[in-house]
Image 1 (cartoon, rainbow, N blue to C red):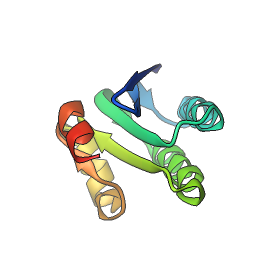
Image 2 (image 1 turned 135 degrees about the vertical axis):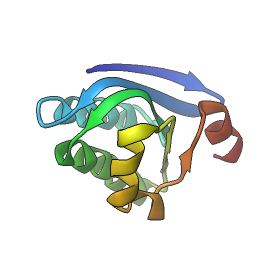
Image 3 (image 1 turned 30 degrees about the vertical axis):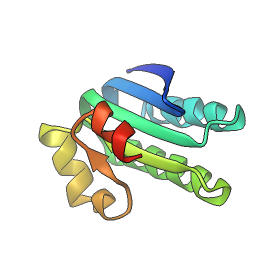
Image 4 (image 1 turned 180 degrees about the vertical axis):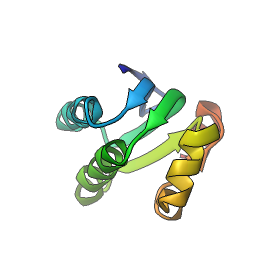
Length: 110
């Protein structure tokens, strides 16, 4: 898994590629926790290059959302497709996290 973070229009865009599973989930959670500790409050997870997500990966995304809630932060997902989108939707993440087709849309609606 590879994680790239960039600031764009007041958002921290975290692009994740590869597999988000038991072996890599903690890495995502730690990266986002560091970002939040440094003052990041509006986070967009770009999952366009994510090939696979397991239940451990879902838990790490949920943990990030929970860290942002008490500080009135926000988390949005974008770029989901195929099996990754299906896993997030079936798991009900679309009921409490906004999901957008592109980074641009997430930035506009954010």
